[in-house]
Amino acid sequence: MSGHATILHADLDSFYASVEQRDDPGLRGRPVIVGGGGVVLAASYEAKACGVATAMPGRAARALCPAAIVVPPRMHAYARASRAVFTVFEQTTPLVEAVSIDEAFLDVAGLWRIGGTPADIAARLRRDVAEQVGLPITVGVARTKFLAKVASGVAKPDGLLVVPPDRELEFLHPLPVERLWGVGKVTAVTLHAHGIRRVADLVRESEVELVALLGTSMGRHLHALAHGHDPRPVRPHHRRRSMGAQHALGRPRSAAGHDPEKVDGTLRMLVERVAGRMRAAGRPGRTVVLRLRFADYTRVTRSHTLRGPTARTDVVLGAARELLAQAGPLVADRGLTLIGVAVSNLDSADTEQLELPFDEPASDGAAAGHPPVDRHALDAVLDDVHGRFGTRALTSASLLGRRPHPAVPLLPE
Image 1 (cartoon, rainbow, N blue to C red):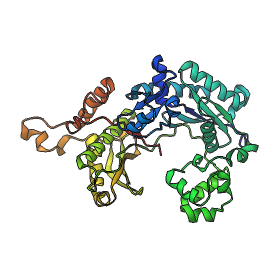
Image 2: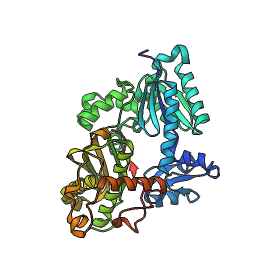
Image 3: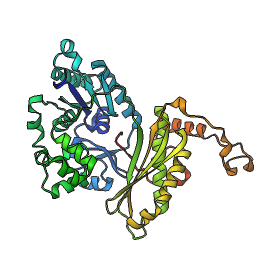
Image 4: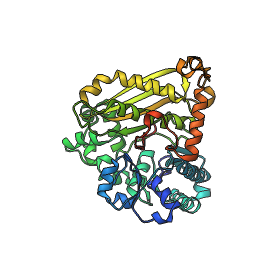
């Protein structure tokens, strides 16, 4: 059915906040912020109407919406809700490609005779998610993955939008360039400075001109999207290649920059979050990636590939600390405003080689009169405690007294 609008992009609305409102009737219809200690992890549409946005500092969010109810994140509740929603997806079609915990692409090209038109299937999918899981979901339907995702974004919240193939450019061209994949704040500023504010403006630029303005990769990418080109198929059972999280530190208050202990504590929190997710998913990884953003809005990425795949917190933290030390001169010169940690080249759990604790320092082992520390067992205990009682119940001594800051998940790569 190539050439027909048979790809669905299903995206749960304000997922974390919607789960909180579903589980607590007292929150329904009220502004809800999930997180808020350091940054906003999610916000209900009632809070978004006040200007609250994901990744916004909690203090700024509460200033915009004083009536907001701030609740701590419940990752296990969100994971259960996600599994229930994906069960509905898989009952709809076997061709489901997960994008994240709250969104997926579905290919319904082969279901015309038994399921009706893609619009009928999308409407039924929304109804099934509402009835079986109790959550609102928006669905975009189009010929390509890109257009389906844009359609769901336009249709939010709790909507359905079909983009017919013969009206794709009519739908796409009036939209702001920020709707295109890959156009963030920095790219948008560059485009706006050259008078390019809507997709129609991009279409008037040649690929050569866009490459000269944005670089080869981004220029070609946006030229293709502006013309509606996206040949990627829906890939069922596609597994994520990386897991990561990031946290905004804000601008340093002094010329000396942020307190090194604060930076190291943030790095540890991010590593513990990422390593825990890797263990929960059974996906050890080989490459540790550190991403830094500076006060002048420049960014750098550093990476280190380990000898073998691992999900051990201490190993990932050690590699991340080395990468941060290597970037020390840049941090001192430019002022650090954001830290991101990711682990890529993910494998299956059975590829991780469990090591005997021969490399533990003497302070952990026999010199102190105690057996060496089994780091795998320690991680397993921490995961169990966090799963039962939350991440605040048990933490590293270096993080005692620090306010918990929800880490914003990095987009899957």
